[in-house]
Amino acid sequence: MHRRLEHCKWLMSSQSVLTPTLRFPAAICRPRANAEFGFPIVRRDISPDPVNARSCGIGFPQGLTWCTVEFLSALFGVEMLGQSRDHGVQALALGGAGLMLAVLAWRHMRRREQPLLALDVLAIRTFSACLCGGSIFRIAISTLPFLLPLMFQLAFGLSALDSGVLVLAVFAGNLAMKPFTTRVMERWGFRPVLLINGLLGVLAIAACALLDERMSWALVLFILFVDGLSRSMQFTAFNTLGFADVPNAQMSDASSLFSMFFQLSMAMGVATGALLLRLSMSIHGHAEQAQTVDFQLTFLCVAVIAAIALLDNLRLPPKAGESVLQRAWQGRASPGADGLPAKGRPSR
Image 1: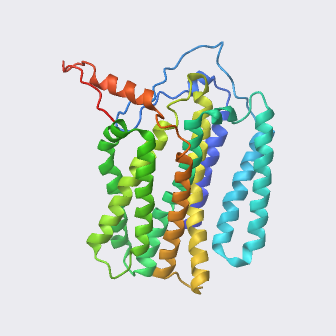
Image 2: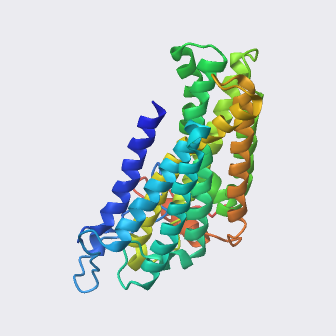
Image 3: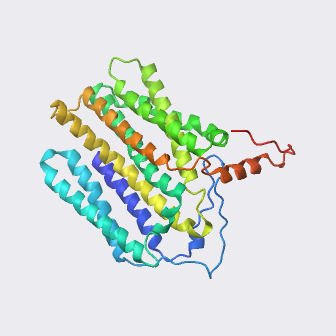
């Protein structure tokens, strides 16, 4: 089942790679993006300017071939490592080939005037930090919807219904945080939110290593609910800040690159979870079926991956995204249809 899910997510990531190859003006690709629940962080008007419109080329260029084979090699290499130790040599060979193709694709796209994925946008510090650190954090977070149901059913012996009810606590936390994300980011700013909330997310993932079959459902639901709260806030902050400083001319390139890494990191999360679980089973000598102790060690490893993602957030300037937050506050505080007067911006 998890292999089928892995392949489906890889197809989504491939779709995000193929999208920029179609010959559309860059102005059409620019998103008129608002953050979740009406947070007007990045607003880009579509400008029908045929002179400045940049076409991205069509067909299957060399860069597309390298990127596609690279992603295939990385995903299937990690998946093969998670399946069995008998495939170790083949998996390492695929990983090495994917790494080599990644270097070739990077050099190719740096030399091209109109590459498949324009890498100049990575010079923007906020975008590159959200792309790299955000992708690592998504890999860690994406393992939970895969590992939690397995642990509840295989290790705890719960039914599929009971397991689903417990996992719903994560997504309940996601929804519960949405109305507060705007206020939190406006009050404290992006960098403190990403660092402090990211640390809470790491602790929440590590707390999943405390789960066992003797723990009460109330405590399990609480831990997973807190994890969902942190997950939602971190995702929203990454997705919003990533485009805060991107100029209008580079918005299409940034959107394509961000979308591709988003889908790839979600797929890599499933494969990484399977790999870590297999390694934990090997350490504890459980060849047939995973036990609770295997999942506990896996969650600790996932927490380490999430902690590594926080290091990239340290590169953010203290006032990262400040101008965007000011525009968002001014837009909401200005007199509107309800006739309410404007209010002062809250101090940090």
